[in-house]
Length: 192
Image (tube, rainbow, N blue to C red; front, side, top):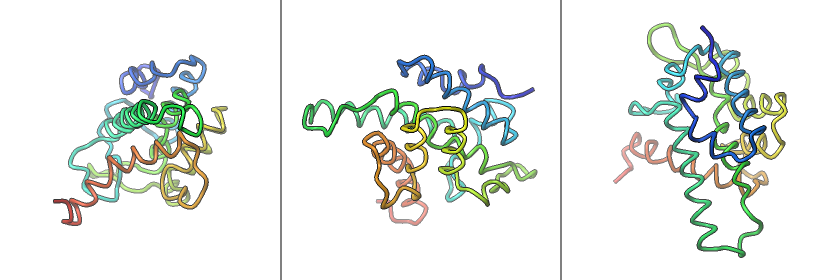
């Protein structure tokens, strides 16, 4: 049994349908399949259950749920910005790049995290060499995804601090941290 197109569609079918460019949507799916193969993930349920971070208690929020929340959050933010700012935006938001980048922002975690053999998770050998924004961007580039999408992956996290972010990458970064920071604050006892 290996991770397949059916697994990708089970996890992210509705989100993939939001990408207007069918070729880009197909490459996003291929990226998930290749990352799962390289990381040893065999099924949609394994990816769904995997924690989205090892840095804090995720309170049972799985990796795929986090990814879907980032896609929806990025789209919601983009739609609010377009509605409120309109032509005042520096340029139109590329929704295909936004959705593809949001879907793949953490794809490198399939290489960064592995099961520990005891029902938990740990950083893999690959994860000790490369954090997920780097491994994910390298994989996306190798599979022929557009540079704009690989850029969103590469700079969505702390690796992007102080570096130029595209409009889409900044929106993905904000949506990602909006799903992470409340848990981090709660973990530290600072969430009211």
